[in-house]
Length: 143
Image 1 (cartoon, rainbow, N blue to C red):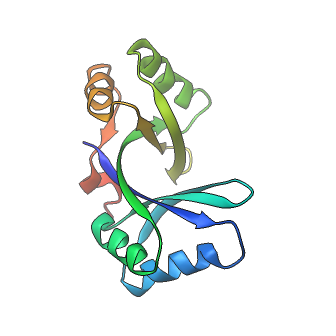
Image 2: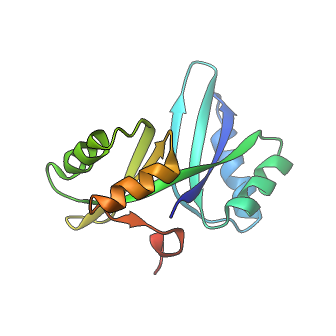
Image 3: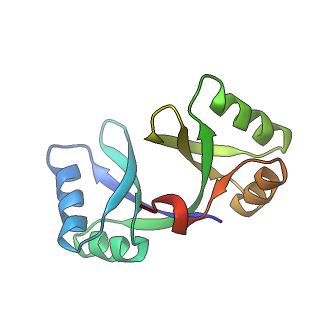
């Protein structure tokens, strides 16, 4: 139950993020969540979109260098210590986290953390064995 993430490099200058989002919108690709990390000259835009393959085609056609990556969506209680409880289990399983970002679907209920693990398949198995809710792509953004 991994989720496909779309990633691209973006020049760190005005208008480049807007251009990437416009390229996706022009092809009808809905952005569910994103994270942008930057340096002085470029940024890495990581997105969870409704159709990752179509998103890749749209950004490639617009001149961006893109990549599809497997990440894991984990349901986290939206309370103090919710994430810490998940991380305790990840640490106990010896899982290496490369990066993560989060969003809340309903404040005070649950949040979703998108995690890039070094070994996503093993991470899914270990987390599920430890009672952690790993969210399938089909239900991640169900209405």
